[in-house]
Length: 294
Ligand code: HEC
Ligand code: HEC
Image 1: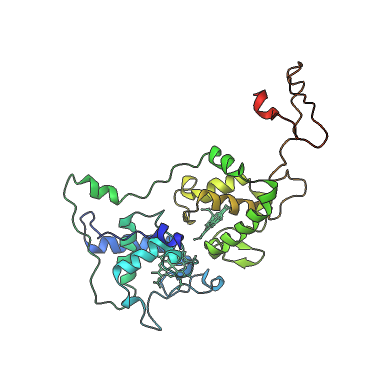
Image 2: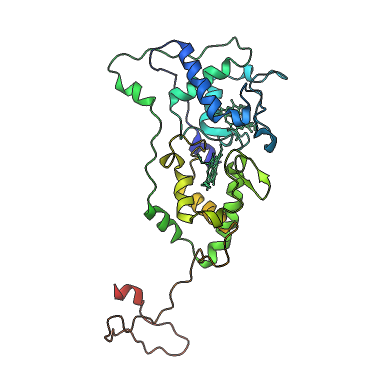
């Protein structure tokens, strides 16, 4: 359950820029129609075009068949949007949005969702921020994820050996379901249709691109509908390895190569390197050329 802890951030009281609640409701509606309606439907009834691919289906936010949403507190709604289904023991098919939206945007979503079902409890309060109170204004910025470097990918890949490769690929396949990627992406006919079909990802995409994209989609396309699900470096490497096997061409270079055989250093600059060893049969060479040569 460490994942739950990782995502659990208790919502602070919404204290944001002045402006009437209607403006926040309007802003929430706009965000909802771009990012949420493919699953929840334009009116929030749980009937978006991607809903048929999901089990459990997206929650009907209008309470048309059962009284559910109106019993949740504002904080509970905030938390499930921020931490995703995975963060509150619901289905991971409800994505994590806390790495993408600002607090203000998420509270605006809560305020909008409240207009979709009968509700007479506490309203979401958007208090006025005093002039010059930068700390508060800052809180309403979107979280910033640094660009993911080529080095980070390379160092993650350097941990993968021929012995561990198959295990990492299998783990990546599990993560793809357990972290909710499958809610939006289809592989061999299974999964959602909000994002591109990944059946041939290993043929179409470079591993390094896959890794850097899934760790920070907004770093490539700021308004992409793909959320940053907060994958760790290790999770992202495993998922990348898995996707890289899909439809991979037989002629493509291997994902991981065996280390160079030892006893190779001689002749590096045409001189004797002193690395030729006089090993007895069955014993290892005494030196590691890779280290001596550089
Ligand atoms: C990929 C599909 C998908 C997208 C996109 C999506 N949701 Fe969901 N959502 C779900 C599913 C599936 C559930 C039901 C989870 C369960 O009951 O286990 C759900 C449940 C919910 C719930 C009810 C949580 C509860 O406590 O029962 C809320 C609120 C919600 N989503 C809000 C949003 C908002 C806001 C957005 C957009 C920022 C959004 N969802 C985007 C699939 C999605
Ligand atoms: C809420 C839906 C959603 C979820 C969840 C999601 N994606 Fe995506 N993904 C998209 C969309 C939409 C795009 C297309 C990017 C764009 O054009 O904005 C995309 C693009 C991609 C691409 C690039 C595909 C290409 O052809 O360029 C990869 C790889 C990918 N996603 C992997 C993942 C993985 C791995 C996960 C889980 C960690 C995941 N996605 C979760 C919606 C989603």
